[in-house]
Length: 326
Image (cartoon, rainbow, N blue to C red; front, side):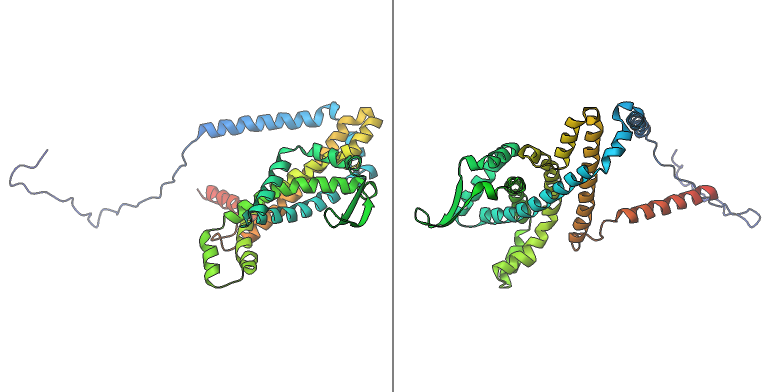
Protein backbone atom coordinates (compact mmCIF):
# COMPACT_ATOMS: atom_id res chain seq x y z
CA UNK A 1 0.00 0.00 0.00
CA UNK A 2 1.13 3.54 -0.69
CA UNK A 3 1.92 5.89 2.15
CA UNK A 4 -0.79 8.49 3.02
CA UNK A 5 0.01 12.11 2.20
CA UNK A 6 2.38 13.69 4.65
CA UNK A 7 3.66 10.40 6.04
CA UNK A 8 7.37 9.91 6.40
CA UNK A 9 9.23 6.66 5.75
CA UNK A 10 10.95 5.13 8.75
CA UNK A 11 14.32 3.47 8.38
CA UNK A 12 15.11 0.26 10.24
CA UNK A 13 16.81 0.89 13.51
CA UNK A 14 20.52 0.40 13.55
CA UNK A 15 21.74 -2.47 15.68
CA UNK A 16 22.67 -1.43 19.17
CA UNK A 17 25.82 -2.42 20.90
CA UNK A 18 23.95 -5.08 22.83
CA UNK A 19 22.81 -6.85 19.67
CA UNK A 20 25.50 -8.98 17.99
CA UNK A 21 26.12 -8.25 14.30
CA UNK A 22 24.72 -10.74 11.81
CA UNK A 23 27.37 -13.09 10.42
CA UNK A 24 27.09 -13.94 6.73
CA UNK A 25 27.84 -17.62 6.17
CA UNK A 26 29.07 -18.90 2.83
CA UNK A 27 26.62 -21.15 1.09
CA UNK A 28 27.72 -24.00 -1.14
CA UNK A 29 26.58 -23.77 -4.75
CA UNK A 30 25.28 -27.14 -5.90
CA UNK A 31 25.77 -28.05 -9.57
CA UNK A 32 22.75 -28.59 -11.75
CA UNK A 33 21.63 -32.20 -11.61
CA UNK A 34 21.61 -34.01 -14.94
CA UNK A 35 19.97 -37.43 -14.48
CA UNK A 36 19.96 -38.14 -18.22
CA UNK A 37 23.74 -37.93 -18.38
CA UNK A 38 24.14 -40.31 -15.44
CA UNK A 39 21.69 -42.80 -16.94
CA UNK A 40 23.47 -42.73 -20.32
CA UNK A 41 26.84 -43.15 -18.59
CA UNK A 42 25.56 -46.15 -16.62
CA UNK A 43 24.13 -47.79 -19.76
CA UNK A 44 27.38 -47.30 -21.67
CA UNK A 45 29.45 -48.70 -18.78
CA UNK A 46 27.23 -51.78 -18.59
CA UNK A 47 27.53 -52.38 -22.34
CA UNK A 48 31.31 -51.95 -22.24
CA UNK A 49 31.58 -54.31 -19.27
CA UNK A 50 29.51 -56.95 -21.08
CA UNK A 51 31.62 -56.59 -24.22
CA UNK A 52 34.90 -56.93 -22.33
CA UNK A 53 33.56 -59.88 -20.33
CA UNK A 54 32.47 -61.68 -23.49
CA UNK A 55 35.76 -60.89 -25.20
CA UNK A 56 37.80 -62.33 -22.33
CA UNK A 57 35.71 -65.33 -21.34
CA UNK A 58 34.50 -66.58 -24.75
CA UNK A 59 36.57 -69.69 -25.60
CA UNK A 60 35.96 -69.09 -29.32
CA UNK A 61 38.68 -66.41 -29.36
CA UNK A 62 41.37 -68.86 -28.12
CA UNK A 63 43.54 -66.31 -26.38
CA UNK A 64 46.18 -68.94 -25.62
CA UNK A 65 46.71 -69.44 -29.36
CA UNK A 66 46.69 -65.67 -29.82
CA UNK A 67 49.60 -65.31 -27.40
CA UNK A 68 51.39 -68.11 -29.26
CA UNK A 69 51.11 -66.42 -32.66
CA UNK A 70 51.51 -62.77 -31.62
CA UNK A 71 55.33 -62.70 -31.65
CA UNK A 72 56.04 -65.58 -34.02
CA UNK A 73 58.84 -64.85 -36.54
CA UNK A 74 56.56 -65.20 -39.56
CA UNK A 75 54.17 -62.60 -38.10
CA UNK A 76 57.02 -60.22 -37.27
CA UNK A 77 58.47 -60.64 -40.77
CA UNK A 78 55.10 -59.74 -42.24
CA UNK A 79 54.86 -56.76 -39.89
CA UNK A 80 58.26 -55.54 -41.10
CA UNK A 81 57.11 -55.75 -44.72
CA UNK A 82 53.96 -53.82 -43.82
CA UNK A 83 56.04 -51.07 -42.22
CA UNK A 84 58.39 -50.88 -45.22
CA UNK A 85 55.56 -50.67 -47.75
CA UNK A 86 53.69 -48.08 -45.67
CA UNK A 87 56.81 -45.94 -45.11
CA UNK A 88 57.89 -45.90 -48.76
CA UNK A 89 54.37 -45.30 -50.00
CA UNK A 90 53.73 -42.50 -47.49
CA UNK A 91 56.88 -40.60 -48.49
CA UNK A 92 56.45 -41.07 -52.23
CA UNK A 93 52.71 -40.41 -52.04
CA UNK A 94 53.24 -37.16 -50.11
CA UNK A 95 55.90 -35.98 -52.57
CA UNK A 96 53.62 -36.80 -55.47
CA UNK A 97 50.70 -35.11 -53.74
CA UNK A 98 52.66 -31.89 -53.21
CA UNK A 99 53.69 -31.82 -56.88
CA UNK A 100 50.13 -32.51 -58.03
CA UNK A 101 48.74 -29.82 -55.72
CA UNK A 102 51.21 -27.25 -57.02
CA UNK A 103 50.34 -28.23 -60.59
CA UNK A 104 46.65 -27.89 -59.77
CA UNK A 105 47.25 -24.38 -58.39
CA UNK A 106 49.56 -23.26 -61.20
CA UNK A 107 48.56 -20.86 -63.97
CA UNK A 108 49.35 -23.39 -66.70
CA UNK A 109 46.13 -24.90 -68.10
CA UNK A 110 48.03 -28.01 -69.18
CA UNK A 111 49.38 -28.68 -65.68
CA UNK A 112 45.97 -28.03 -64.13
CA UNK A 113 44.25 -30.38 -66.58
CA UNK A 114 46.79 -33.18 -66.14
CA UNK A 115 46.70 -32.87 -62.35
CA UNK A 116 42.90 -32.84 -62.23
CA UNK A 117 42.70 -35.87 -64.54
CA UNK A 118 45.20 -37.82 -62.43
CA UNK A 119 43.36 -37.09 -59.19
CA UNK A 120 40.00 -37.89 -60.78
CA UNK A 121 41.23 -41.20 -62.21
CA UNK A 122 42.98 -42.62 -59.15
CA UNK A 123 40.25 -41.51 -56.77
CA UNK A 124 37.75 -43.37 -58.93
CA UNK A 125 39.65 -46.63 -59.47
CA UNK A 126 39.68 -49.07 -56.50
CA UNK A 127 43.12 -49.73 -55.04
CA UNK A 128 42.85 -53.48 -55.54
CA UNK A 129 42.30 -52.89 -59.28
CA UNK A 130 45.40 -50.67 -59.48
CA UNK A 131 47.55 -53.29 -57.73
CA UNK A 132 46.35 -56.18 -59.90
CA UNK A 133 46.78 -54.09 -63.05
CA UNK A 134 50.39 -53.24 -62.11
CA UNK A 135 51.05 -56.86 -61.16
CA UNK A 136 50.11 -57.91 -64.70
CA UNK A 137 51.71 -54.89 -66.35
CA UNK A 138 54.41 -57.03 -67.98
CA UNK A 139 51.72 -58.72 -70.09
CA UNK A 140 51.03 -55.35 -71.76
CA UNK A 141 54.60 -54.03 -71.94
CA UNK A 142 57.35 -56.65 -71.85
CA UNK A 143 60.12 -54.05 -72.15
CA UNK A 144 60.36 -50.39 -71.21
CA UNK A 145 62.66 -47.96 -72.98
CA UNK A 146 63.89 -44.40 -72.47
CA UNK A 147 64.71 -42.23 -75.48
CA UNK A 148 63.41 -39.62 -77.87
CA UNK A 149 59.59 -39.71 -78.29
CA UNK A 150 58.69 -41.38 -81.58
CA UNK A 151 62.44 -41.85 -82.18
CA UNK A 152 65.34 -44.09 -81.19
CA UNK A 153 65.63 -45.45 -77.64
CA UNK A 154 68.73 -44.81 -75.57
CA UNK A 155 68.32 -47.93 -73.44
CA UNK A 156 65.64 -50.45 -72.56
CA UNK A 157 65.09 -52.96 -69.76
CA UNK A 158 62.92 -55.93 -68.96
CA UNK A 159 59.85 -54.83 -67.00
CA UNK A 160 59.34 -58.21 -65.33
CA UNK A 161 62.78 -58.05 -63.68
CA UNK A 162 62.27 -54.55 -62.39
CA UNK A 163 58.70 -54.97 -61.12
CA UNK A 164 59.23 -57.15 -58.07
CA UNK A 165 56.40 -57.76 -55.63
CA UNK A 166 57.69 -55.02 -53.33
CA UNK A 167 58.04 -52.53 -56.19
CA UNK A 168 54.54 -53.28 -57.47
CA UNK A 169 53.06 -52.80 -53.99
CA UNK A 170 54.92 -49.54 -53.30
CA UNK A 171 54.20 -48.07 -56.75
CA UNK A 172 50.51 -48.98 -56.61
CA UNK A 173 49.99 -47.58 -53.11
CA UNK A 174 52.05 -44.46 -53.89
CA UNK A 175 50.07 -43.68 -57.06
CA UNK A 176 46.82 -44.06 -55.17
CA UNK A 177 48.03 -42.12 -52.13
CA UNK A 178 49.33 -39.22 -54.24
CA UNK A 179 45.83 -38.55 -55.59
CA UNK A 180 44.37 -38.15 -52.10
CA UNK A 181 47.40 -36.33 -50.72
CA UNK A 182 47.13 -33.80 -53.55
CA UNK A 183 43.68 -32.74 -52.42
CA UNK A 184 44.79 -32.59 -48.79
CA UNK A 185 47.77 -30.38 -49.65
CA UNK A 186 45.74 -28.20 -52.01
CA UNK A 187 43.07 -27.66 -49.35
CA UNK A 188 45.73 -26.76 -46.77
CA UNK A 189 47.34 -24.20 -49.08
CA UNK A 190 43.99 -22.63 -49.91
CA UNK A 191 43.19 -22.39 -46.19
CA UNK A 192 45.98 -19.83 -45.69
CA UNK A 193 44.54 -16.32 -45.56
CA UNK A 194 45.07 -14.32 -48.74
CA UNK A 195 46.49 -11.49 -46.69
CA UNK A 196 49.51 -13.64 -45.91
CA UNK A 197 50.26 -13.96 -49.63
CA UNK A 198 49.80 -10.22 -50.15
CA UNK A 199 52.01 -9.33 -47.18
CA UNK A 200 54.77 -11.65 -48.40
CA UNK A 201 54.53 -10.21 -51.91
CA UNK A 202 54.63 -6.65 -50.52
CA UNK A 203 57.93 -7.45 -48.81
CA UNK A 204 59.39 -8.42 -52.17
CA UNK A 205 60.14 -11.99 -51.13
CA UNK A 206 60.79 -14.56 -53.88
CA UNK A 207 57.94 -16.95 -54.69
CA UNK A 208 59.84 -20.00 -53.45
CA UNK A 209 60.69 -18.29 -50.19
CA UNK A 210 57.07 -17.18 -49.73
CA UNK A 211 55.84 -20.74 -50.16
CA UNK A 212 58.57 -22.43 -48.13
CA UNK A 213 58.74 -20.06 -45.15
CA UNK A 214 55.33 -18.38 -44.93
CA UNK A 215 52.56 -20.24 -46.76
CA UNK A 216 53.48 -23.89 -46.29
CA UNK A 217 54.17 -23.77 -42.51
CA UNK A 218 50.71 -22.27 -41.98
CA UNK A 219 49.13 -24.75 -44.38
CA UNK A 220 50.60 -27.62 -42.36
CA UNK A 221 48.13 -26.86 -39.54
CA UNK A 222 45.39 -28.04 -41.87
CA UNK A 223 47.41 -30.62 -43.80
CA UNK A 224 48.76 -32.64 -40.85
CA UNK A 225 45.49 -33.94 -39.31
CA UNK A 226 43.95 -34.68 -42.70
CA UNK A 227 47.03 -36.41 -44.07
CA UNK A 228 47.45 -38.49 -40.92
CA UNK A 229 43.96 -39.83 -41.56
CA UNK A 230 45.17 -40.76 -45.04
CA UNK A 231 48.28 -42.34 -43.51
CA UNK A 232 46.16 -44.49 -41.21
CA UNK A 233 44.11 -45.56 -44.22
CA UNK A 234 47.36 -46.33 -46.04
CA UNK A 235 48.56 -48.58 -43.22
CA UNK A 236 45.31 -50.53 -43.38
CA UNK A 237 45.43 -50.50 -47.19
CA UNK A 238 48.71 -52.41 -47.13
CA UNK A 239 46.66 -55.52 -46.37
CA UNK A 240 45.73 -55.58 -50.07
CA UNK A 241 49.31 -56.26 -51.19
CA UNK A 242 48.64 -59.90 -50.27
CA UNK A 243 46.83 -60.14 -53.62
CA UNK A 244 50.07 -59.32 -55.49
CA UNK A 245 51.94 -62.17 -53.75
CA UNK A 246 53.61 -60.02 -51.08
CA UNK A 247 53.38 -61.60 -47.64
CA UNK A 248 52.78 -58.64 -45.38
CA UNK A 249 51.21 -58.84 -41.92
CA UNK A 250 47.78 -59.80 -43.24
CA UNK A 251 49.25 -62.12 -45.88
CA UNK A 252 51.33 -63.97 -43.31
CA UNK A 253 48.27 -64.47 -41.12
CA UNK A 254 46.25 -65.69 -44.10
CA UNK A 255 48.96 -68.17 -45.02
CA UNK A 256 49.15 -69.53 -41.50
CA UNK A 257 45.37 -69.66 -41.35
CA UNK A 258 45.24 -71.92 -44.41
CA UNK A 259 47.87 -74.19 -42.81
CA UNK A 260 46.23 -74.17 -39.38
CA UNK A 261 42.46 -73.82 -40.01
CA UNK A 262 41.66 -74.02 -36.31
CA UNK A 263 43.67 -70.86 -35.60
CA UNK A 264 41.98 -68.53 -38.07
CA UNK A 265 40.25 -66.46 -35.40
CA UNK A 266 43.36 -66.04 -33.18
CA UNK A 267 45.41 -65.08 -36.25
CA UNK A 268 42.84 -62.47 -37.25
CA UNK A 269 42.96 -61.10 -33.71
CA UNK A 270 46.76 -60.94 -33.94
CA UNK A 271 46.46 -58.85 -37.11
CA UNK A 272 43.82 -56.66 -35.49
CA UNK A 273 45.94 -55.93 -32.43
CA UNK A 274 49.03 -55.12 -34.50
CA UNK A 275 47.05 -52.71 -36.71
CA UNK A 276 45.64 -51.08 -33.58
CA UNK A 277 49.17 -50.60 -32.24
CA UNK A 278 50.42 -49.11 -35.52
CA UNK A 279 47.52 -46.67 -35.86
CA UNK A 280 47.81 -45.69 -32.19
CA UNK A 281 51.49 -44.83 -32.63
CA UNK A 282 50.64 -42.72 -35.69
CA UNK A 283 47.90 -40.95 -33.72
CA UNK A 284 50.35 -40.08 -30.91
CA UNK A 285 52.82 -38.69 -33.44
CA UNK A 286 49.97 -36.71 -35.02
CA UNK A 287 49.15 -35.09 -31.66
CA UNK A 288 52.69 -33.83 -31.09
CA UNK A 289 53.11 -32.65 -34.70
CA UNK A 290 49.82 -30.71 -34.47
CA UNK A 291 50.92 -29.29 -31.13
CA UNK A 292 54.21 -28.15 -32.65
CA UNK A 293 52.58 -26.33 -35.56
CA UNK A 294 49.93 -24.80 -33.29
CA UNK A 295 52.53 -22.39 -31.90
CA UNK A 296 51.50 -18.85 -32.62
CA UNK A 297 47.97 -19.83 -33.67
CA UNK A 298 46.58 -20.35 -30.15
CA UNK A 299 47.13 -18.50 -26.89
CA UNK A 300 48.28 -21.67 -25.15
CA UNK A 301 49.38 -25.02 -26.50
CA UNK A 302 47.05 -27.98 -25.90
CA UNK A 303 48.18 -30.02 -22.89
CA UNK A 304 49.91 -33.34 -23.42
CA UNK A 305 48.31 -36.54 -22.05
CA UNK A 306 50.78 -36.49 -19.14
CA UNK A 307 49.86 -32.90 -18.34
CA UNK A 308 46.16 -33.78 -18.49
CA UNK A 309 46.75 -36.66 -16.07
CA UNK A 310 48.61 -34.43 -13.63
CA UNK A 311 45.90 -31.76 -13.82
CA UNK A 312 43.18 -34.35 -13.26
CA UNK A 313 44.94 -35.80 -10.23
CA UNK A 314 45.49 -32.31 -8.80
CA UNK A 315 41.83 -31.40 -9.27
CA UNK A 316 40.73 -34.68 -7.69
CA UNK A 317 43.02 -34.13 -4.70
CA UNK A 318 41.70 -30.57 -4.26
CA UNK A 319 38.10 -31.75 -4.44
CA UNK A 320 38.72 -34.46 -1.84
CA UNK A 321 40.30 -31.95 0.55
CA UNK A 322 37.40 -29.55 0.04
CA UNK A 323 34.85 -32.27 0.76
CA UNK A 324 36.75 -33.30 3.89
CA UNK A 325 36.88 -29.70 5.12
CA UNK A 326 33.10 -29.28 4.72
